[in-house]
Image (cartoon, rainbow, N blue to C red; front, side, top):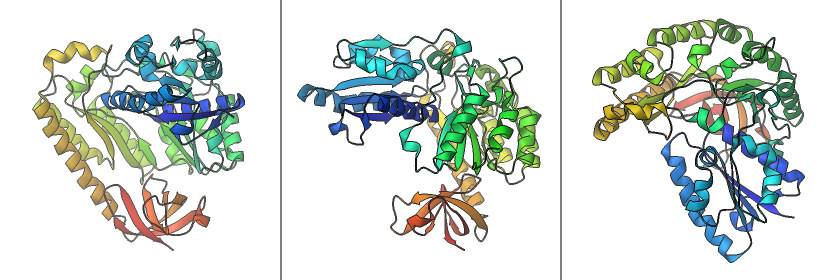
Length: 438
């Protein structure tokens, strides 16, 4: 049987799309392999949010394409870089056979078939958003996993000046709630305990469909599915998180005590230039309301350092926001210009690279200190941990996560996988906790 190797770069949406491709190709007889040298078909599923994934793509193809010179091999690039670059990739990599964007995932089998006789590019967005085809086939790798992703929407209608997502994933389309619930039930039937609902802006779920349930109602409906033990979601836009979603943290006990709420900057001036459409105080009010609804809520965020025009005063506002919000983790990056984004018009105000590096180092250093302080405060506490499997580094040690998304390592056996284990925390590191089963 033909074998497919899928390499995934980027976000949870890419991980989810790769799972759908495994499922759809499996219907056509392809078997997934972990060894690229054993593959008949190689798909690189790419991200374009920052520059590093593009570099990874070039590096990976540099290693894969020589294999094709030795034997028959179909090589494809999928995802956001494929959507953004299209036929340019065929010119850049002459032995590439297939390029297709996120909207073409449901057609992956027919595209692979066509690529056996000619080079193929498919980067057309699905024109009829009312009938957008969300693939329902389950990732074959979902069986035996503790957690799984479920997409609830695709695309984004926000116009953040730094973001390329609207160009690479198209307009926002919400998935019908019955399809979402059907996939949740199917995953639970396969043993999945933890569900993560994903979308570019989950808080706007359903708003474009007249009479359709909104995101808060979706959370209630998924929470009610028997067998769902932990419910998470990604990603929220602070502007669109309403009081009904905040109330879910009070009313839904299996909704995880963790929220990733991207802020991007603590400066109102920079937020306006980013077109985020909220202020620092609006964001902090939302944080206060969330923690009132769920006092043990763990908050993480995204921060861009060195956005064009960012002054020392603007950066200090971001540092002070870090102190007020007490984020227990953040994805922080220096600003990266992306093709076709409005922020390119602001590059005449670019911050010198040395200044950006110094600011980023300072932010990340303080963030690490706050994480260590938060984890040190947990020492001695007993926390329920859902065991995910054996540690990748220590024999006789298993790992799992708390409701607050804290990774905990403790001595145990593989028989604990999928179980809730009370663990007394004995030590806190910057990114993980150490403990012992009680």
